[in-house]
Length: 318
Image 1: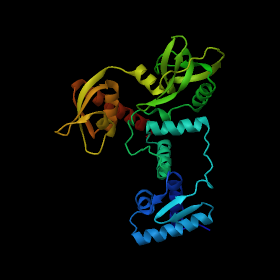
Image 2 (image 1 turned 180 degrees about the vertical axis):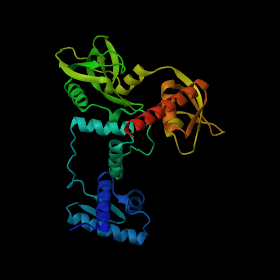
Image 3 (image 1 turned 90 degrees about the horizontal axis):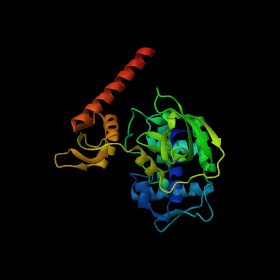
C-alpha cells in the first residue's frame, strides 16, 4: 500500500527526533525540541506536549527507548544505540570532499542534504554558505581509480609512483611520493605527501594524477603538521590588499575573509591574489572588486573566458 504524505511526514519527524535525542548529551526540554527539531515548530505548548507523548509511544513500539518526564525528553542510550554507519575509504573521501568543495552538482547536493538530515543529531558543520566557486570544481572530474589507488597507499603507508601532467599541454612526468592524503582547497583537490625526488613536501593537483602504482620502500616519510597547512604553504602565491563591494547576504567566503567598513565595502588584507580572483569571479555579480584594478581586470577576464567556453559548448551540441 502506498504511503500517504501525512504518513511520510510522521516518519520523518520521528526520525528527526530520534537523531536529535541520540546526539544530545543530556535530556532536553520540550522547548528545545520545538526550536531545534524539524516537525515540531509552531506548536502550542499543549499541542507540543500531546505530539511528543504520541511520538514517544510510537518510538517505544518501534524499539527506541524514548522517555519523557517532568518536562524533559530523552532516549536511554544505555540500552539502545544505532549501529555504526560504515563507509569504504573511497566513499568517505568522496562524501567529505564533495562537502568541502561545495559543488553545485548532484554529489554536492547529496552531501549537503545528508548533513542537513543529521544536523538534528548535533552535527555542527554547515553548508548554508554558497559554493566557493562554480567555474572550476575538481569533484566532477576526479578519476575513481586514482582516488582508490591513492587512498590505498595512504592507508598502508606505501610509497607510490604516478604520472603527473602539470598542465593540459605539458609533457607528462613520472613522480614518486610518500602519500599522506587528499586535501580540498579553494574548490580543488590535491594529493599531498613527501616528494622523494625533491626531498620535500609537495602537493599535486589530483585531477592531473594518473597511473598510480605501489613502490616498495622501507623509509616512508610521515607528516609532521596538518595536511591543510602543507597545501596552503606549497600553493601560496602573491598576496594583495583589496576592496570589494558585496550584495548583502551573499559572497560569505569573501566577507568572512575581510573587514566590513562603514560604507558597506569589504577590505581584504594580505589575501592570496589567485584565490581572490577566482572567488570574486564565482560570486559575480554579487561581488565586485573595486581595487586594485589589475585584480578586477583578471576577474573580468576569467568570467569572459568561462562565458566563451560555455557558448562554445552550446554551439557544438546545439
